[in-house]
Length: 558
Image 1 (cartoon, helix red, strand yellow):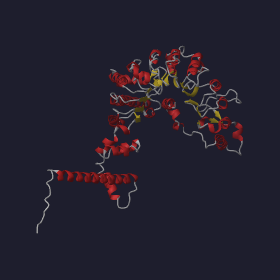
Image 2 (tube, helix red, strand yellow; image 1 turned 30 degrees about the vertical axis):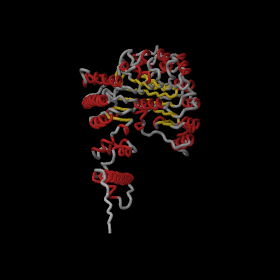
Image 3 (cartoon, helix red, strand yellow; image 1 turned 90 degrees about the horizontal axis):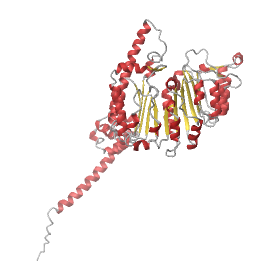
Image 4 (cartoon, rainbow, N blue to C red; image 1 turned 180 degrees about the vertical axis):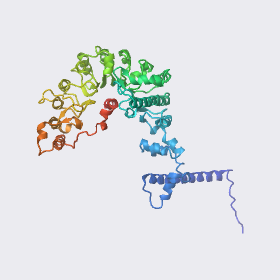
């Protein structure tokens, strides 16, 4: 018998090895994907707080230990997961481990950064950490500095420029307050330097907003400037801050929003010259609010304004907004201006002239250029005769805010506003920071024609009315609520501002306060009560900050 044996042909060297290796590689990739999917499911279950039966231990290990593979997840996946967290939760999570900290400060997670800082040494380490992580890439940066209630010392050193007649222990207290104020200014300069140094090379910055309401104004200027000379006698830090600010402007490539309000000597009349022509041409919002500029100096001129051809929103000191600027904004080269915020301060009016302000014809031209133009005015301690010059009939005034310490607003001014701006006015704020609360000024010369009631009757778009420091009669308050109804979204009147007729008080059968609350609530169509604690009203305690924030939202609402 013959046996035929088949001899296998020899394979090329390495053929079996290559085929097996390919199969092993595919198997390992599939196994790795399954493992990552299981770990991801466990991580998500742990984050949701609803682990399934039998997987509780795996979920906890996935959150806490590298052995379970939480740290081995791709960084892109961790970034995507934590993109659903709020900013505060991200900061808390960054303390877990270095890997999470690296992922949580990925630029895509922090497109905007809004910081509100107390001027306190304890804030500096946290600010340095945050700005070191985000300052070089953040696209929108909004920072607010503020001394906490002006150090809770009744308005700061000198108490707002009043005559100081204190002796003995009061002088010691004033000296301690002065020392604390020097420390505040010293800390303020360090915090500002920290912010500016961190973003000096940021070319992605599109919105940059700074607010620093720590200066205490008086009739002769700013008291903080006196203390500033003690904190920075050579002016080196101020010069460094100004140079850094100009460097940020010169290095910017995408800046469209620049806002600087009440910052202590950070903006100079030469700061805007650091902007390139291309950036100035694409700027959409510009806000330069600083009433500490000496003499007739301005932060922007009409010639510089010609470069900002795409400007849609502008905020300036009223004395800096001249007739020539109004003419520039009506040129065909400029896009229509839609928001204009103006700050009228008694300090500026004292040192600058109102002769160069736009007349009624300029306002008519601006309104023809842009039918959507709306104006927001805030007036600090302005005399009635000056307000009569400022309030031109053709201003499309939508919001007005009066804040008085010495000079009270007259009923004639309120009546003028209700007559001239009945088609536009939506916000009316009337604040009077009087010391003697025994008798508030009464706006109505004739009790049958109260200016506030006429304002509510004529201004059909009125949605916000806030009053403190002026007498508001109870029956007039009820009339305002009935006239405006549910269209009046906000009605804020302090309890001490409300007064009652003798007839209402004499009626023993009706509680006048309860009746007022009931009638006003019925008229507004919503529960209402008077403001019991004036300190809870931010528009009264922090008028500069309130105006700045309202101006920001006013400008963004285009």
